[in-house]
Image 1 (cartoon, rainbow over the protein chains, first blue to last red):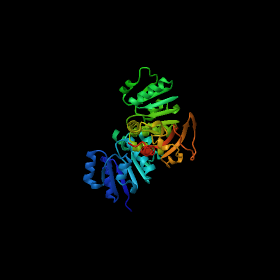
Image 2 (image 1 turned 135 degrees about the vertical axis):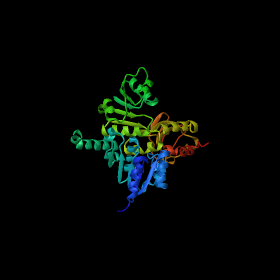
Image 3 (image 1 turned 30 degrees about the vertical axis):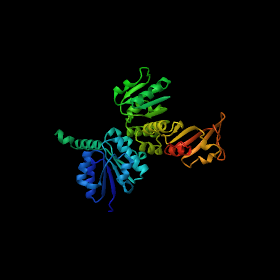
Image 4 (image 1 turned 60 degrees about the vertical axis):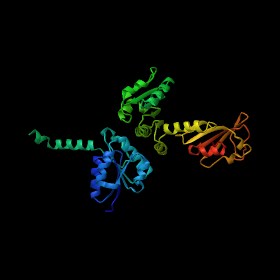
Length: 144
Length: 217
């Protein structure tokens, strides 16, 4: 497998965990994070590949080397920011693959292809679905 | 017209009051209900407490029959997102987003979102007042990327050719008023004393225009 150059915007828990797995799989990771605390935690793991700044600012993305990136993951805790990042990634920087996190399930309808989103992930909705499926599966045994 | 305004800060409240008093049907949305206290007592429109990009909030505001929408919260990203929803998902005919960040104000028009940048516009006006009182700003095009200025012909230009003032992509003479009569000059037209000239200028080239007019300090 040829390693991919992947940029993650938002180095919170989800961004770091995803980055760790992708690094272990041999991919080349870069991060952009606007909060000092999260940036510091990410630097402990990913070193110089962490850039401090607002990922919605095209100049910050350029500083992080966006022109050589193949995959962007917009993983901030702010849905407006993730949508703006997807628009910039797809329409301005022509990134082949744009993945986004959706924080509020009621915002899922906004994360569409015409806004530059290839695939959107909503951890809250996904986890809730898994919990419900688990309960459905075991409902009978639980009732005894 | 039925007009939706997102954000009831100073700009939103003022805009809502202006539109309401000119007889339009206005709905203002803000996540903070206290913001509606900024509206003038004469405001006849509707207020909705909510987030501007919630589908239900927008439907309650009548976005399906809206003629126009202005996203004027203090968050650039929310304004861009709401404007894109209004234009792309609900096909509202006239949509504008207020953008503070000049970089984003220049990028998003390329993606079909009309932006008004208070930062670019205000700094442009203040710049002119301080530096170029001889140039009278008539109109700002788009997010103030291009300005229309009017000025009286300076001695340096008398008997010079109109094409001497045109600079490709930067400066173009649009019209001349001579003895009260306006006309569109050809490249061979010659400036006369007391002509009033209307010129379109890229905002970044104002200094160049001033230099060509002999207005440098």
